[in-house]
Image 1 (cartoon, rainbow, N blue to C red):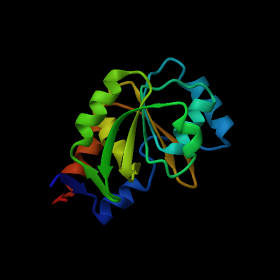
Image 2: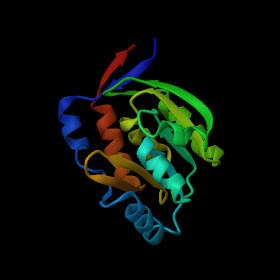
Image 3: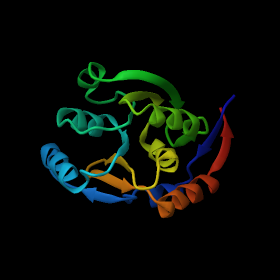
Image 4: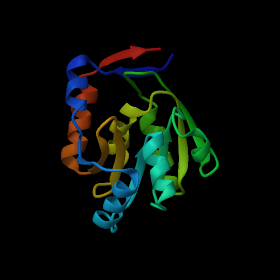
Length: 170
């Protein structure tokens, strides 16, 4: 059995609002905005198949990707190498995620963390293991792409969400 943090309903409401800056537009417009506005920033993580695929299509470099292969499967498979597999059920964050993501980002070579389950909430540990000043980028369904410039404020926000979660063993 493994330890998981189950996100409560009141936390889900907080997380339904983008944590960082929401960038709207067509994929090519979003990619250009990110290239223009963040050209001197390292991208620690791309979270989600759509964001990762968009970055690959526009040659935007990142250290690691976190995907579940629910969309754009064929285009991602050919371009990234598998490094890790992580079980993460919907509405939960696997406690192992911090270690897996820390190792993945330290590899700094575009490796992929394949998530068996749902990857959305893994933006939380991705923010926490990233260096201040680096970016974590994730998709906000139906809205656009969110860019989080990691800092102590966001790391504290993540810790508060996790510490107020229900601990379960699966």
